[in-house]
Length: 119
Image 1: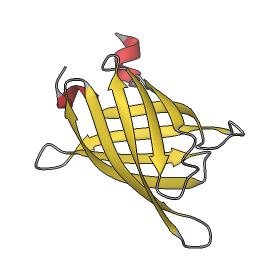
Image 2: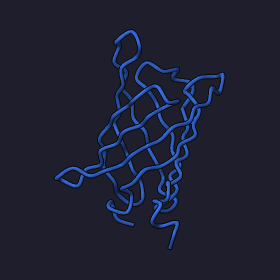
Image 3: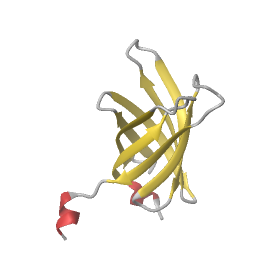
């Protein structure tokens, strides 16, 4: 698999970095910049946008991300995805100020383009 195979939009399901196993869903859009680095944009629970940049090697995708909370605090973290295929990513993540005893988890499933579905 090469980095260009990952470009696209994915449905995500995940759990937060805490003992309560709070879950969320949303979308993840992956694109490339002019240096073939990953640009990531998450839209979580139809309300929170997160952005990140990353790199890809040996079917592992690593993205540093950040987002602003409602009180304007900026949170930062890192997510690591194992690329099961170009359509399924399995990951775990941690935020700087998250509970250090737990990792968040996330699974991503590629959204097929309408044109692909018709073929």
